[in-house]
Amino acid sequence: MTLDAFLESLSASEPPFLPPPLRALWFDAKGDWNAAHKCVDDKSDPQSMWVHAFLHRKEGDLSNAAYWYRRTGRDPHKGPLEDEWREIAEALLLHAAP
Image (cartoon, rainbow, N blue to C red; front, top):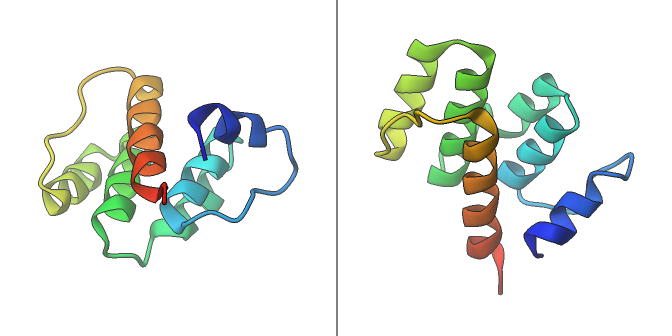
């Protein structure tokens, strides 16, 4: 799936079939933080933990976010949330491509 197709899918009421971290980003973009968090809360793969870190950063829980960034081996993102969302989405979509 391309980023454009992913963004277009946001007009639907339900997400397309997506791996949990992309599903979380989909729900986050739709304004449903709780549904997004549920997608990655119990996952331990690096992609899910990266989204988990982003969600806690967005929530304003920076110490929790820092914990999840450390688990991924990434430094906390310093720029706008929108930029990080797009960076994660692009990376995950690239990773999910066959």
